[in-house]
Length: 291
Ligand code: G4P
Image 1: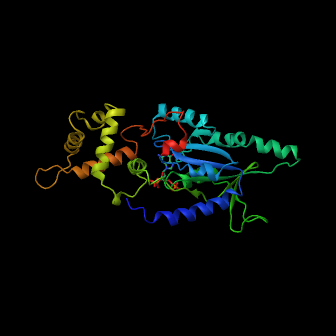
Image 2: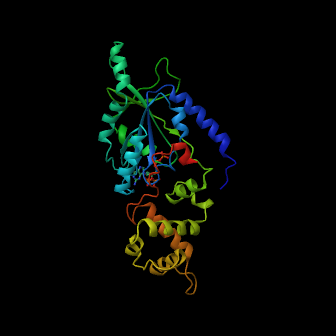
Image 3: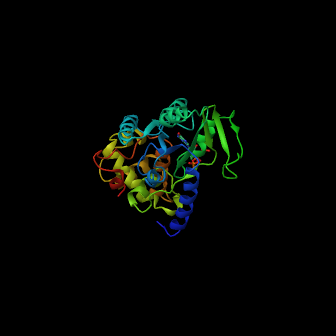
């Protein structure tokens, strides 16, 4: 993986984020429920210290429900507010307003004591690319939302979306950078389709996925492709190629085509609801886990 472009890009993103964070009370961080750790960057913990925090496990329609609950508990134990959502369908979004109030209750109380009434909570959405930030803003803010435009004292050009009387959302999300230096993180993000396929070896990726599914979700491949889950991972890919009639000229099997089908169907949730990461040992710190 080419990481040469990365430092400059990251510095700029970080600087922009720092400026935006000064304007807000609450960070709503979207992670991908299939890879809740690989799809987050713990730098946000440093950038967002002293801010209220809400983590949304997005695309929870594609992830394993049992694991969703485990991840909810995991993040709760770390002191975050957390909730599974589906930004595409809108499922779970109704609860988010309440959670925002809950996460900011100390600020609301502080304001009240100082006699400040009706100052809206200001929030921003952050997350790595493709995690669903734009989809979330569109579904959550809805069609009825009003853009509040520039206000005196607010950095020029910032647009706020008034969600209701109590909450305003920065209309442009903060883009976090994935932890590409960790190869396993890169592989998991590739599996969910968050890294461009043209820089990847899809055959290898599909073999990794097959290995994981056989171990964590035994039977799921045999059910989807009507194959036996026997032999090596390569033999499984071969069986998928045969079952889906992936053939090159003559009768030779087209492994790459089978790999593409498998990855596609996994990413679209057709194989089933699958989570690629389970919560690590709660005794370890997040930084150690990201390693
Ligand atoms: P970003 O701003 O964070 O980069 O992500 P964006 O909203 O563009 O979403 C990336 C893709 O993820 C989109 O699909 C979007 O529809 C999908 N998505 C977002 N939230 C959810 C969710 O909760 N569940 C599921 N299943 N998908 C979700 P796309 O294929 O790129 O576009 P499209 O097919 O929706 O047009």
